[in-house]
Each structure stands twice: as C-alpha cells, then as structure tokens.
Image 1: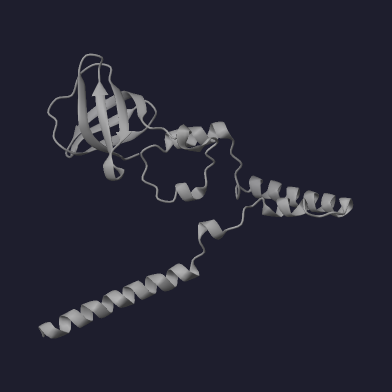
Image 2: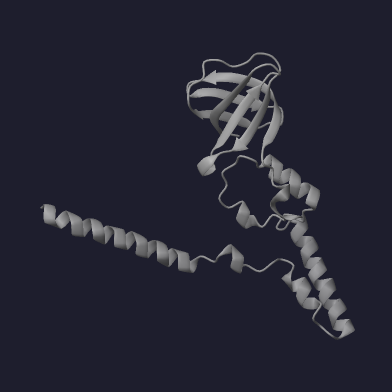
Length: 184
C-alpha cells in the first residue's frame, strides 16, 4: 500500500502544476494589455490632417463615454499620492500592477504612517487601533499589558516580510515593537 502513495501524490502534484500552467497561458498578463489611450496615440501617426482630426474626434468621444461609464479613470499626481497614502498597509498584491503613476519614482512612497489615534480597544487577539484617518490596525502578535493613556499618536512602519510595526506615543511614554496588520 505504501508503495502506491508516493506515485499517486507525485501524479497529483504534476496534474495540479500542469493545470495552473495551462490557466496561466490562457490568462493575459497586465503588462500585455494595451493602454486605453493607445488609440489616441495611433491617431497622431496619421499624416492627413482631415483624417487625423476625424480620428481624434472619434477617439475623444469614445474616451468621454468610457469615463462617464466609469470604465476608465483619469488620475493626477495629487490624487495618486493621496491614494497611495490611504492604501498604506493594505496587502493588495495587484496594487502595483494597476500602474499607479509614481510622479517622481518611489520617493513619494510613504515610508511610515503617522496618525492620531482615535480609539484603542483591547480585543481577544490584542489591541485594536482606530486612527483618525479611518484606518483600523490590529495587533498580530506579542503581548503588551500596558498602553499609554491620553492623546496617542501612532507611527506605523513597514517591517520584514510584508509586516508592519507600530509605536504608540502619548508625549511621555512610547510603546514600541508591536506587530500589526491593517484590518480596514
């Protein structure tokens, strides 16, 4: 009986990997998708003035309709920065693939989040921090029996392996080293 277990397990792994590879071949990569503006850029290649204008008019009309239907969204640098700041701490593997504009590289990527703490609650798994900006963070490991009282400020920084650490400060006392994860 034991001699059949290994080949069956090996066969099932081969089937699983072959199915995922077949699915991956059928699924288009985000990098391969054309920009919604590519048709606009194609118009600029037309040499005849009348045909180029007609092309621009047609594409502009279709872009306007797509924007009204919320099929595409235009975003400026200030909105992109705000979105990145609000998304701090979310584990969204597809977020980098969305192609949010960097407007100056990674230097505008927040290295830490500093926010006033609206409320601290003690839950079954540890502390829950509700920040003034609406974000909710939950302690993910460790045990802390003391939390400073008064007006608290939280500083959340990326730690190893996609985790985050929080330090909470009331101006006099600081609690450091607590691992947290963003819940909301």
